[in-house]
Length: 186
Image 1 (cartoon, helix red, strand yellow):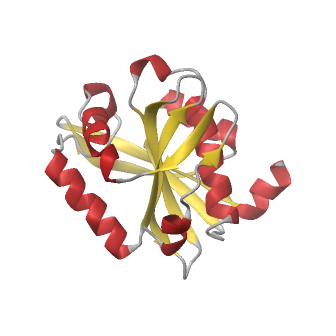
Image 2 (cartoon, helix red, strand yellow):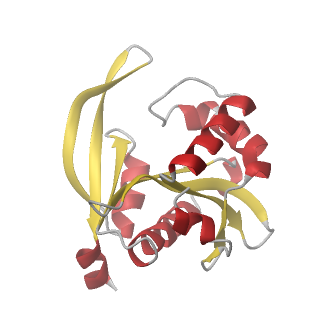
């Protein structure tokens, strides 16, 4: 994780959720969520992961300081429901890529994802001093796209036939948010 991410020992506070920095104890839950068919269907990689694979990834991002990942916690019951992260953090160009998944089925459709994305955007802009946060999403994932647009992301372009998934060519939508546009929205 980036140095700033490691110093973020405090959770990021939201209304109905808070974001807890990812640690080694979260590995089994991440693996469980990532291997759900529903989650895999919306990830660019369809390959399931093992706990060992996750732990190798966790150690690598700590060493490279290129990712800030958090667990989304439902404040009402204090239970983890998903994960949100900024990866490929590029301080020279002041940008990073956002990613999120809701792992718990009963947490879907409640707006927790949008709230988590807002917290990560604020963290990226105000703590990491980023200028741009972008994301990639399958063009046919309309529910996710609507959620990102509610937060303020705009459609920037389409990578046609960018991913081969289940033997089908999939278009990928690039969405982005610039800090000056985020400030205007406030």
